[in-house]
Length: 164
Image (tube, rainbow, N blue to C red):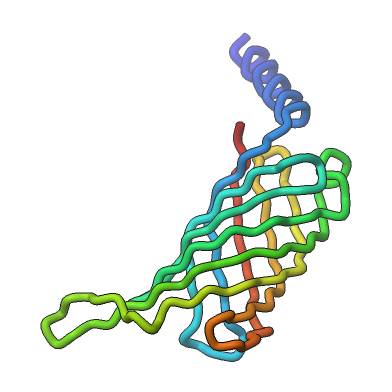
């Protein structure tokens, strides 16, 4: 009897996970600069699906003496209800803040070291429906508005858990 009840709950869970539409996703995010070992950042990310092709995402990331915040608009080429695999394009902005440690060990903001970047990305994602997890990777190009520099060498990797 216990096996039948557990089996029924497993079937209901499987059916409901396929029938539900999860608009919110939260997870871990990594931004790796391919040309430098010192520019890797890691953080948290949230995503909200506007419809079956469009989404907004925001991230907070950092490393020693550095923190950044960003927001992106993503367009997925395949309908998320019909395909778990997707190809996406995105545009976004980010603000980066750097700190300097003085001899007394106190972190102080560097007044000239906050950067506002624009970013473009192209990537692939796969959604594992039974466990509501998605994995993604993207190639990202950043443009630093303050220094008029282009950095075409970032790889973004992440994993998200989808809920609500």
